[in-house]
Image (cartoon, rainbow over all chains, first blue to last red):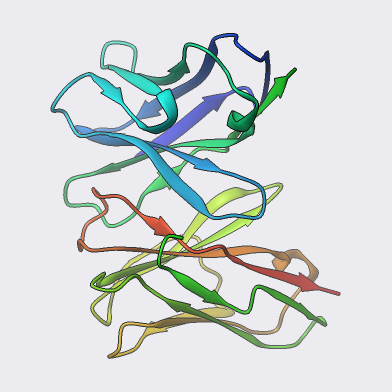
Length: 113
Length: 114
């Protein structure tokens, strides 16, 4: 069975600081991994997706994530936080032949001026 | 704008009642997913349809049911409502049958059960 664990329900950074949101996955088959972002009063939208083509995945708004099979991790990073990055971020997993995407509990990112 | 439309955006009802949530997927998408988002449970997968056929079931209660119609819109029916059913219900769509592609989410229907 697939599962996702996001470490830290809340993360607070200063504007301009590094953003690091942690995600570990569990999958018995090669996974597809996703990061989604949810702004207040909106639905989720895709930031980036890993599909085994490259371990370092670049997404929108300057975010990127690195797939590390040995650590079963897919952490999300951004070199310099912006106030507009304040939102909730969800890591998710699926796999070939599966019909559902499993989401982590989410990490709320706060950006301080 | 994701292209996924959900109605109503907000719904307030009483315990024991029945409600229907509606979702219109993006043009061309054949898969529709329903998720429930609550503070204590997070984002929980409920059910998926592909081109009118049920493909996967998650943590969906027996009091809940869904269907996808020939025009590909979907409805989620919630009956005998309880206080704990208060949540944000999301519909998402994708072009593929499987779950390896991007999901496009609607803005959700916020259900409050009093």
